[in-house]
Length: 320
Image 1 (cartoon, one colour):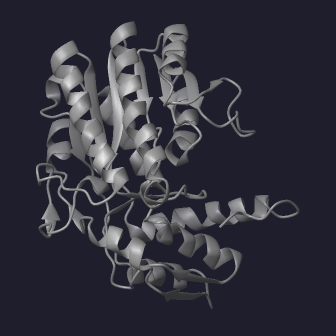
Image 2 (image 1 turned 180 degrees about the horizontal axis):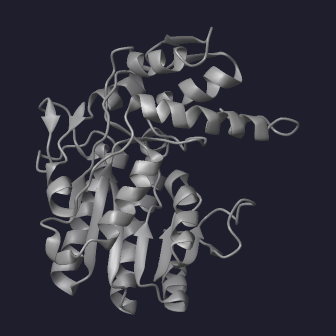
């Protein structure tokens, strides 16, 4: 299988690349950043701008992928700071990918959406078909991307499918998401012994550990089209409060000082998101099931964060 991965230098793409190679796929990566030092040698890295249609066309024409995993995006908090760039990357970039797929016969586009597509006034448990009324540029571009992909499938027959990710947690440095507070409890808890979260202690949104998220991508991408009843699926794992995450960290890092001071802008974004997702359609259609709860994730994550921090000793500090 030939896979083109856009946004390959981001949080999800970085972790997905070795999994694709490990199962025997031929992989090309497309990102505005230069090839990172940790990128596997077998990956064909192409530096380019997702907002420029000729550059997207060039890489799709040259590589002729069977599938495109479209991960390039500007996330929620950063998107509110640079909304016009967020529109260009998230919306124009998605259109460029879909149009290149149409022109050059790519069979499948896998799209990563988000819980930011929802908005205020949500029910306690949010299903796939709750009205989408996002409050951020990130969320509204992802809604538009979901609809545009479905139109390309209806009009041109491209197999368009994807997931709405909850907040993702992995052993890395986040890229500007509103859910970053969760990971920084682990990172700064180990690095400095303290962290002040920018949310209220009782804030609650869905989260997922990265190994589960990556598995969801691969399982849905590989699922037979005939089994799918929709294009975009909620996927869920855990929904802890910020205080519950802090307690999990405190129980594993003696003496750590974790406090809370809500930032009004980011708190407002967080409060517009679901607390709990209903992913019954994903479980019924393609057998989705998460593996990691908060305790199992914390046990697995902390050694990886220690290694991340240790790798920065003697060099540049891990950025906050």
